[in-house]
Length: 112
Image (cartoon, rainbow, N blue to C red; front, side, top):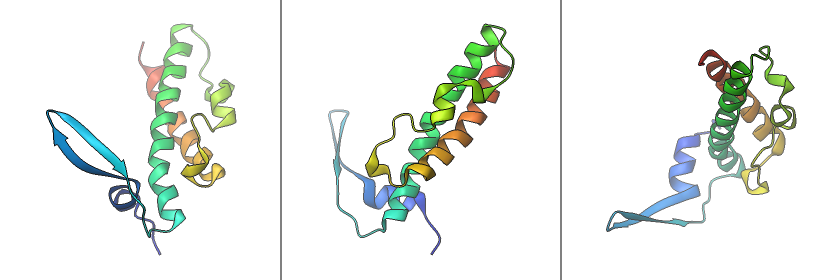
């Protein structure tokens, strides 16, 4: 079965329950989705964190006139910054994190 990360996120991770006075209340709900679907949805979080960290590292390296080298970053090598076991398999999180880190690093390094 093909993973549908956005659907799993919408149905299983968090549900918007109300919007009163501009404040949105969010509550966690239980789901029947498989753990692989939950992990796929959390993969988006790994990508968000990885991209942000990579962009910052790339921007800092460019500013400091260091050579282009995303692997030099400890966060890239570790690959699990902000990981929580509820996100599923740590190795999948690391894969998504590192791919996004590289993209963010490229873009951050290109901006001075």
